Image 1 (cartoon, one colour):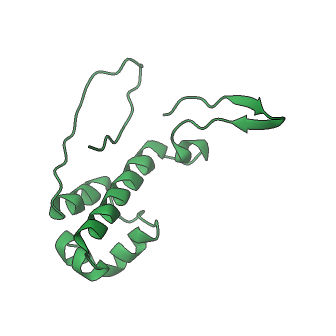
Image 2 (spheres, helix red, strand yellow):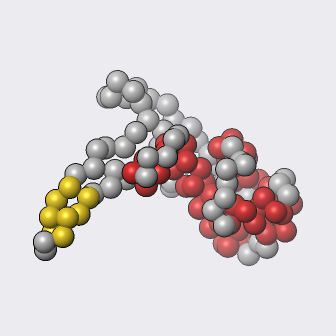
Image 3 (cartoon, rainbow, N blue to C red):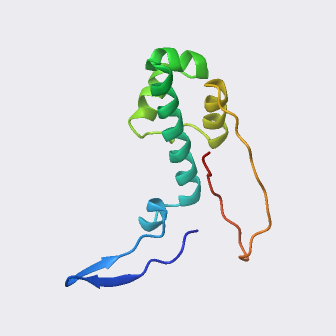
Length: 115
């Protein structure tokens, strides 16, 4: 999970700093996974735009039905796993590298690093 948020006052207004994971800040379950999935969806969207792909063309390349691509573009990616989203990026011409390393914390965390 992300860092605990801090509260401070700026110009008389109480401001709470986020943890870096909006899903955790909202108290959603599996916030780390949601953050990774949303990052993958953002990259898929960027890839589609860069390549000038319609939803239909992108769906064919990614091997998913067009309505799922439409839902993904609207922010509904609950029906797609992290693995499927990574597969979609692979099919759009992206390499994915998974790096595993010991954590300084007792419990490690999931992160998405974009090149």
